[in-house]
Image 1 (cartoon, rainbow, N blue to C red):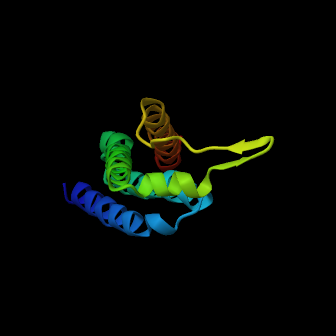
Image 2 (cartoon, one colour):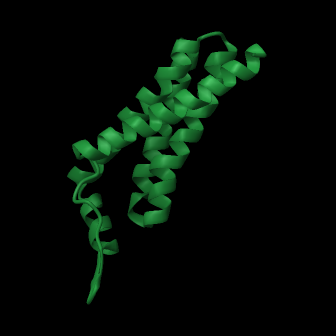
Length: 136
């Protein structure tokens, strides 16, 4: 239970850091902050859960927390206007080149993508760790 609490606290702190830095991010740093860092956090906590023989927790707890974190940050950035500023700053429309960013980060397709990303990668990581540590 203590691990789940620590995992949740890490995501709360991380969410606050992302929110306060959201005004200064680029599309590349957005990708790192919303897709790569949660995968790393998930991998670390999955290893901790598995080392404590909590295999089911290792497969689902951290991806659930990272998905909730993503949805909350998406909702907060949407309602605060930060997302609109980000979209306006990085949408390019020049002659034959058009680079646009979705009008919301919490559309159904984005949430489905995030769920598959977080849970899929975490499942692979936990499977590899279980096989490595069990010696099979």
